[in-house]
Image (spheres, rainbow, N blue to C red):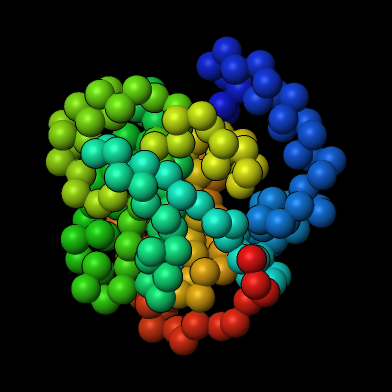
Amino acid sequence: MTDLGGRGRGPWIELALAVGILAATLGVAAVWVRAREHPLGGGSRAFQIVRPATPAPVPRIALSDLAGRRVHLEDFRGRVILLNFWATWCEPCRAEMPAMEALSRDLTDRGLTVVAVNYQEPVRAVQAYVRELGVTFPILRDAEGQVARELHVPGLPATFLIGRDGAVIGTALGYRDWNAPEARAFISELLAAPPRGVAAR
């Protein structure tokens, strides 16, 4: 995991301290601090997620894609969403991309949507990177870092698993092998599970 404050972004250090104090009372931040770590696949370090005691509704998110079109996360309501925050300078993020691409290609027809949100980088750099890796799933841009702040993302890569009803049902901070058998089994369970009602956003 790459600390966002480690790239000369001083405000992120202050933000991390503030989040440590406020997280217990702030929406989706509670997923990071109150949830229990739940290793799957016999405790494999390659795939561990954090499961919240109570699924939390994800905030309303609207970001531009690489063509400048506005995309609302709610557009994917009714599908399981793997929402990943990343950057081109983040080596663990690069390592995750092929596995997420494989998941997207294999499980889109079953109801999975992979969405990768780039953190504060120029669109041309992101476009070149995506072309190089052959990524086909949606790429959105958090140009000002506002959404990352709203979701209290402390470092990259960071992933939110969102159920069909719009609830955050799992998180992962740092590299995960999303194409591992344990990961596929878990996501298949999410795809098969009926949606549960969550509090209105």
